[in-house]
Length: 290
Image (cartoon, rainbow, N blue to C red; front, side, top):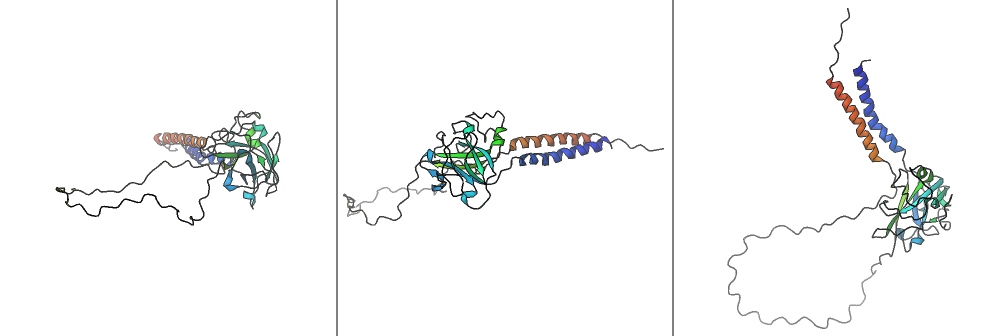
């Protein structure tokens, strides 16, 4: 086989690797079944994930909202509390104390060195686990985020330390995880359901003064000589503003897309260089046999 044929095969292989290779790598970080959510200590969820106090919030999980559906894979998991963006770790104790177990598809209390307070059996037959201790969120709306990831994947993170109070496994590692947001703080009061039944009992103390009974006797002596030459055109523009921050998705998975894009670019570049060299190099003349 000539060197040109080998070169074109190399180009084809590099292009195929750029298209297929990164996709295979990303699939290894696929999500897992089930869902997590927050609840009260007895497993019941309240007020669209709004709680009066930080200590009222418990981690729960399994089939979505205690209904039908896939449960979480059985095993041990770490959890953490962050701000809504996931950039700021708010859990303040060592990660080894934030371990829970999943049995029969639902969160069933702490595991390993986990020492958080457990609640009572909820609607899905599991045992929720309290999220405290965690710091106050920097979010002005009182919003928090909780993440759950398998212990094996978290412990494979570079520099993992069971006593660490700073490891943010969503930000610092590439792990499959589940996520849910919640708020802590007073709820907005509901508007009145019906208008007042009685009008105000006392009208204004000073009614408007009486308008003049006679119009002015003399009109303006010098009316404007020339009306405006042009009428104003256009309309009032609508008020504009900066849109609020979009909360993160409730089920996030780290995929390492930036590294995959870099790998694709490198493979395409190498393939392009080889192809250019083959095109610019003249083919050898065929020899006639005698």
